[in-house]
Structure formats: structure tokens, C-alpha cells
Image 1 (cartoon, one colour):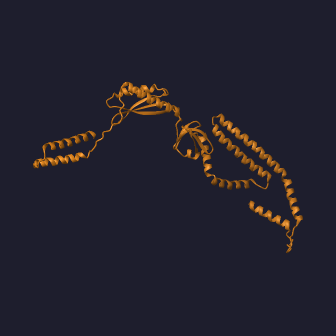
Image 2 (cartoon, rainbow, N blue to C red):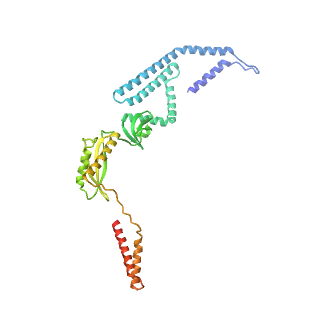
Length: 351
């Protein structure tokens, strides 16, 4: 539609300059200066007539610039008062840009009355499709950031795990979520990845449970040991008294009875690590003072296990030779028999 209008205006301009009735003279350069001046005068007249609309359109555009800034700050302030400052930054910027787009469209319709709102909407529709394909990933991350801030699965300051990354949330921007790992590194994760991936929020609740396994020798009084472990953990600084400390018989291993100790602490990483260290130190000290054995894995290694078969064969041959009286000495037979018996005993102990 717009292209057709431009084509018609071009044809009219050409006719005005050359004149529809004038014939081109062969070998001469035909210049109608009068028509050119008249056309320029017509354009100047049109510009003067449109000047009030242009001034009003510019004024409207400037007014919308200030209005959009004011609305953006208003949205930020309202959400900040509600404790949603990060979401306020995002929604305030979106509001400002949305009002600016509306102001530009209104200013264009005032400056060019022939340009209808329908033409603008049609042009914006085609442009939005092209922009959508060109900036697909950016728009996905932007929408995911809005959804994250609306639903608030985690907040600024929370400690989370996303894929293989674990750390403290520093910022939630329009494109990505920024976390700081415990060793001081900054990780920028696209919002689309965060929204479509399972996220572990370590600090979602005030307390978090930790656990540790202790192995007791089977000849130890495990009931006494469990009482000592529980009392030791309860006295550790940082273990909350609001939730009980548990000691549970958990497994019967080859060389020890496994006792699982469970306790609760504040959910932040620094507190969990410090309390973990103190629990291990104090429980080990308490077990040593009580004289309770905490065994370590033991292994029995058998060397030359293949000699059992050979010894039995030698013994069988010696017995047959003795039976046939082929000159085999009885002492050699007894030695081979003893060797076979020793190997059998070692094999039974290992099994």
C-alpha cells in the first residue's frame, strides 16, 4: 500500500517536471526550470503547512520521554517498597520502553496525517516477526527472567545449585542470573537455562540437616556409644536445639556397626561447614576418651593360592607311589600333606 503511494507520487512528479504534452527534441537537452521551481515551491508550501504538525509531534514525543521516565521510576519505587527491588528494575525498564514506543507512534501520526495507525500497526507486526526470529534467544531469556522474578523460586542472597554450579545469587537480570561461587568466582547463567532446569535452593528454609556415619566395633557397647555421640553433637556450637539430634543404627558392615548421626544447623554454607568440622572433632575426641574402638577396614591377602591344587596332586602321587612301594620316603609324604592342610586352613579363614 505504501509502495503504491510512493509510485503514484513519482509519476506525478515526473509529469510535472517534463510536461505531459511536451515532446523530447532529439539531440537537445530539455530542461524546464519553471516546472522545477514550481515543484520546489509546492514542497516548501507543504512543509510550511505541515510545520505546526511537526512541532506538535516533536513536543508530544518529548512529553512522552519524560512521562515514560516518570512511570518507570514510579514502578521501581512501588516494587522496592514491597521488597521486590530487582523485579522493579526489570518492570520499570519495560514500562518506560513501552510508553516510549506508544509516544513515537502517536508523534508520527501527528507529523504525517496521511499515515494511519493501521499502517503503523501493520509495519510493527512485520517488524516484530523479523525481530522475533533474529533475537529469539534474547527474548526467551528475557521472558524467563520475568517469570523467575514473578514466581520467585529463589531471591537475591539465596544459595542455589544449577547444573554443576553452586553459589550465592547476586543478581537476576533480564538476560541472565549471576551467582558467586563459594571460592569467589562469578558464574553467568542464562535465565532460560535456570527456568528449564532443576534448581536446588539450599537456603530456602532456615535450617538444614547434615549427617555423618560412625563405625563401631562389634565388641563395643553400641547403646553407650550412641548416647555419647548424641550428647557430644548436642553440645557443639552451631547445632540448633530447636530440632533433635538423632543417632540411628544404620548398617552392619564387614568390620563395624554403622551409626548414623544427624543434626540441624542454619542453612547457609559457611555455618554448615564450620559446624560439620566441629562435630567430627568433638565426636572423635569423645570416643577416644570413652575408650571406644572405631575400627578401620582390614584385608587378608593370600599368596600362592594356586599351590593348593598342586599340593593335593603331589600328595596323591606320593600315596600311590608308597602304595606301590616305588621308593618314596614317608617323611616327604607327610610334608606335602601338611602343606595341603595349611593351604586349606588359610583358604577357609579368608572365606
